[in-house]
Length: 589
Image (cartoon, rainbow, N blue to C red; front, side):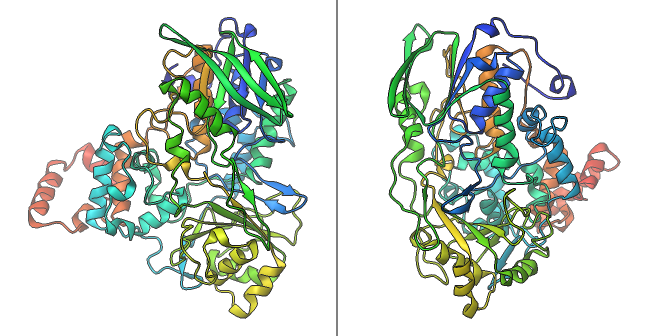
């Protein structure tokens, strides 16, 4: 496997790998990574669809890419995915998947047209004081010390940052900045999270520093991601005769070790409570989604909190059993054990039919949520919320079945160890109605109307005990390589597998690991699109310096006398050169 960029590789079709028709594939988990692996096996590996088997512990596919109209609870979304133009493997996948409505139109086409006609743009990124835009909204408010800390983190190596937390590399000035407010609430970072992952995000998304305050770089699906992305994938794979086996748990995978080789030889399953074993050969390829951020989810309702009690779950148990066989298979306990109690675990889907909530949303967003256009363009963060509550309102309808009088609002709280400002409870202790009341309070609804509006709404809280486990402090080897050293037929896919430079908690990471796994095990002779190289682009770096300093040119920076002399000498030296051109293009001079 190798990485590539440019049109030459992007549009090429690989030749059929040797003996592709003799291969079988067993995919553990039907989340985005598993489904993408199946597509790449068929499209690029030319493995017959009926020789691909997908095992799913639940009764339906999709993993964390969900959105459902539950007959008992109504609409539920556990989260949302923010996408951008440089998700190279994601778009490589969906250029090949037809939409459900028109087989001549790809999912990528539909997505592209939609976001061209209705681009993302947030006029209000953060509020406080019950619905008022913060006075510094649009500015990153980073001190010089905080900017120097960012630069120091970026220049460090991942080896130097093993098991280091974000709050061990940044001081109080950084955490008081709007940059951190925007950054943490957009990506779900907590102060205790991995400094390695923070560094990766800074490098991976440096081209978005200038749009943090308005989120204009983000792209969104027409409906929830299950309907817009997962359903077309399922139809494509079913049409290719891929075998889906639901209510099936993979209990263990036996891996035999010989000289410098690892070969999976047996799958142990439980399917509809029946134990089974499948013997494997080197021609049987195994793709394991190890770990899950949404496994063990519990659900509440308008009058009950989501229960905190939960079992560990099959995906974590399987990873533990694999890790016990070989240290190259990672260290799952680093991710799912000892997650801080302050972490985000609760999100809530509120369905409103009461029109009284509409004016407050309009006032904050400047948009009519009934217009069909994207509303919040990502999160609106409530700066003075004890829960650090975030609000996200997608295009309405967010579900195809949604009625015209229904408005769906998604809420999440990054801090689970603090009482609310209006509801004096931790978010983990609150019913759906109480979480809705806290939201209504923060957007400025008069207190004498809050209880009545929340009672009429249907709010479903979900507790996701592992939702921030991707960001647990880690070091080299805690995540297994996509294809561990010496592995002949076993690969790991999803956000707990290790691939260089890319960032977890993204659709891109799921698809990238799937592509890398298929290309390595099948020896597909086509380049995997490299992670977008914005961190190597001098223009992007200079542009980020301009925005990190709240759009100040170099002469406008608070420099001491010696620094000013040095800057003057530098500017004189580059006068009339190409460097002067690109510094001017970045508004730095």
